[in-house]
Length: 213
Ligand SMILES: C[S@@+](CC[C@H](N)C(=O)[O-])C[C@H]1O[C@@H](n2cnc3c(N)ncnc32)[C@H](O)[C@@H]1O
Image (cartoon, rainbow, N blue to C red; front, top):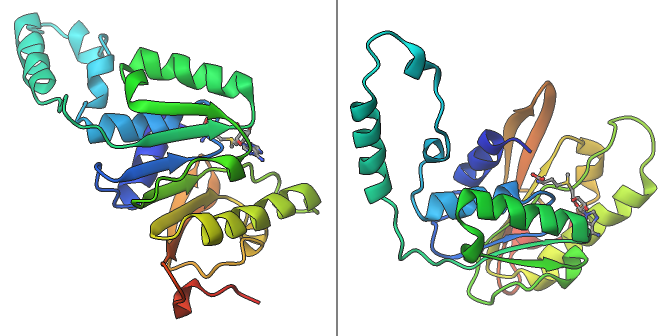
């Protein structure tokens, strides 16, 4: 997932930057890393040292470093939300850790290799965001269908008090989640029409939290 898309989905989730942010199936860690950057108010441009404007005639390096210093001073070093990133692939978690180190946020994220259903979900509530594989749009996806159903069951049973999100480009698989989406936010991943599906995972029984039969 591209960084800008990952950041946009987190902003769309209206995560407050203080409650828990849980990202099972984290892949290379983009969502968890963007969450940590948002929570600590680290502007993405701080990681970049080469811009095309630097090659214009009249470019003043002192202004660039002055502005950079101003943005660095705005970093919130006290921010410490629980950010949890897990993946079934050990290789993915190793890559995630490396990417988080490069972004300067490794210490803010708890990484673990596990099936998504084993992910530790803090009791206090927050946002849980999945970006599962979504395969081709046509044809059968028995294995992914089971995974999508399991994600729905996991959110319903283990994530009470959270807002759950699933980012997918496959509406047929999305139906297998078995929960009623409270919002369907439109995104494009390249040319692919995708949706960020939102689920209110209420404590106890609530009409909206009922399974779709
Ligand atoms: C589409 S990728 C996630 C990409 C990620 N958002 C990124 O920016 O790199 C889906 C991930 O789900 C992981 N995955 C697949 N099945 C899983 C399962 N049952 N439990 C946990 N992770 C799983 C895969 O290893 C893969 O890394």
